Length: 337
Ligand code: KG4
Ligand code: ZN
Image 1: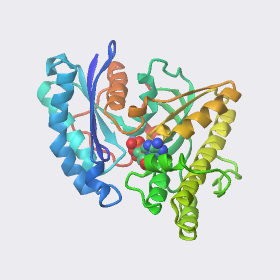
Image 2: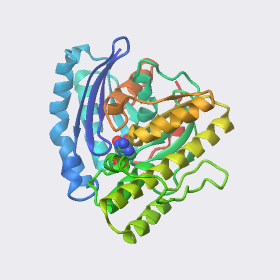
Image 3: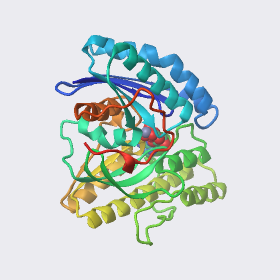
Image 4: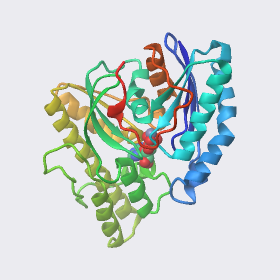
């Protein structure tokens, strides 16, 4: 089975072609980062308009790079939600329009299921069951995963997502949008021992997260600091340390609670090098294993949507052409396969 995947939930137009036997055949991406940089965040209306401009040429490019034509496809998968409604509508309209005219089955994919399954595209995919930590710009979630569609949400952020906290703190440090990777780069020049950020919600039991207090702590720290480049690097270091430490405490707790030995970390923030090395050390000490997507598949992309869609289509699941985009959608509503 060969599936065209379409991702347009936020500010990346991602198109890919995944083949169940041969793996990922092509994966193209257009990032709108420059378009939104002046505004310090994603402007929904601009995002939808840019998806409209890029989506068809990217589909043509993905088909060409995979050396296949529409006749070689067996289905189309698109991100049905959650995300920005206008952006979702572009992908869902194009996907359903193509499915109708090419006479192909179509499947609406949950964006976070896409992130969750992205490590399945690697050479050493995680076997089920496992605990998944999803840390993106819009969501932070801890999930117990028994199989595809068998998800129990163990905890989530009650305010800002981890990526959002990175971006907002980066902005306070004068870095461009999206600031997560730039803050991580700045933190490499930072020294330990100058600042001690709180580890939010780690003293209370439970697996929910809260990152907005960390951002407020950063705001006061930056306001009161001497403003030198080294001090900013030290603040970035301490902030990153606090986020990673908090995520580690919660992962350890989730693994104990569920008695799982495997951890999957996905979503934009899983590209963070410090997070990856700290989690690896933790899992080694727990005699467990940690799995990640490839670096370019941590952030939004079409490959994860094509993969998730292919699994569901090959299990006989299809969406209706009249399905609507779902800006809000719980992972626990998904049917198992
Ligand atoms: O998964 P994603 O592409 O978007 C959503 O679905 O929300 O994640 C984007 C987020 C942004 O907040 C970005 O700053 C963050 O992931 N991010 C990072 C790193 N790379 C991307 N945060 C920390 N360190 C990184 N290396
Ligand atoms: Zn995402």
